[in-house]
Image 1 (tube, one colour):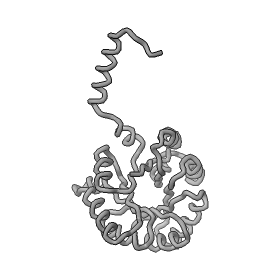
Image 2 (image 1 turned 90 degrees about the horizontal axis):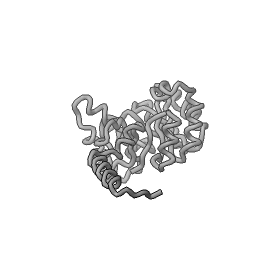
Image 3 (image 1 turned 180 degrees about the vertical axis):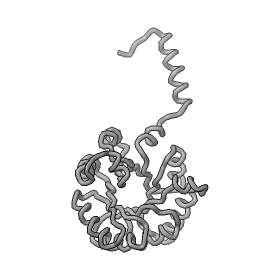
Image 4 (image 1 turned 180 degrees about the horizontal axis):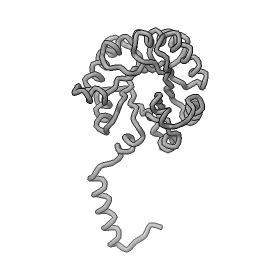
Length: 217
């Protein structure tokens, strides 16, 4: 499974990238706002840090304007994935931008039918939002599983990018179901390394080592 980092925090991206934990980055208007920086400036910097796709989102709602904004964003770097919403206009924009050779991430997906349409429109990535479905008492993992089945049935190459990942369990379940990619905030990725039994075992080992009176260095 590929790991994308869902942030516009350059320092956090650098830290995870140095560990080989970054296959790409996703951003959105909310994350850009949180960063407090110009969208073109921070996106270009991120593209220079990571080799994989960096999703940059359009803010227009009509297809023609989405296409114009997408082309502008794609000029930032070769590894830009233009992010468009899963609306009818977004699908129109996806078809055009993908046809021009751009990577396209179709976001805000909440149904298998939407994912099927995105694949037919040529999306590089489809982003089903797991956490937001959980918020309304639906199981986001069911959606990931349905999309996986449909794409496998017909050989669609669109990659399933599990988004709105909020817990380490979301990460595990997405991997088990077969999502191609997950995008998560830096803190969730870091928490994947944590386990109370690891902490307990390390504490015991260090206590025993202290009793030996020895040193390695």
